[in-house]
Image 1 (cartoon, one colour):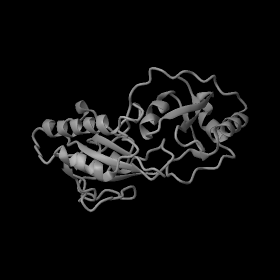
Image 2: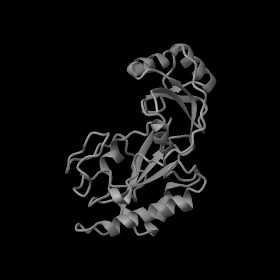
Image 3: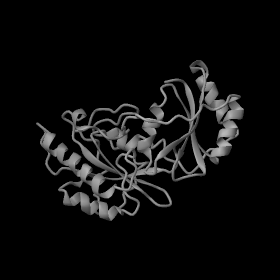
Image 4: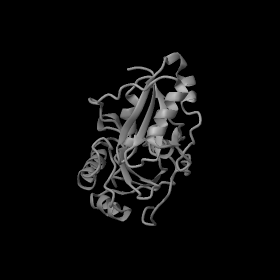
Length: 265
């Protein structure tokens, strides 16, 4: 692991690159793979002293045009060859030999594993890309603040929260059974409706799937809609890491929410 300036590409969007820094490479690459349904590839990396990493990042992006189609930072409208040439010239060093990236762990920024849930209530969160061909991601998680606030940093398109579901039961003493239902529903959706998606793109579903089809599949499993505009419930964690907390009883921020269907209420 070392201090790295990296350039990544979304495998289905050839006209832009993501350029950033990482002091624990390939941690950023592990993180990035769950952000897009099309897969992420390494364009190039450059090794720099950790003490000057911030300065090197600013140098690296000089002259590149920021991509405006996404709220995520560090995306630039540029083809791959030009990006590598520009960063190399800006830094004055050659890129590293491109390694074969093996042994990366399976990682999802949003999902909570069953052993992490404690006594919090798991919900099935549904996000959709605002892309030419919209794609759906389903996330089984107790992380409430994350669902509303956390930007899909490694996706070159905006991604919106559009729906959520939960078990109809609300056992406040033990949530293990209701959380297990949400988890098993998610597993079934990914297995049946996400078979064409790269395995590292955790939770993303197949390209032709519509929200109406997904809604029917989720309801058939026994889950019911959760109202996205409701105040934060006390069955959620008081705060999540990496995002500003939403107070219990407060209305959630709706800037990244698009309620897609009148049935979701």
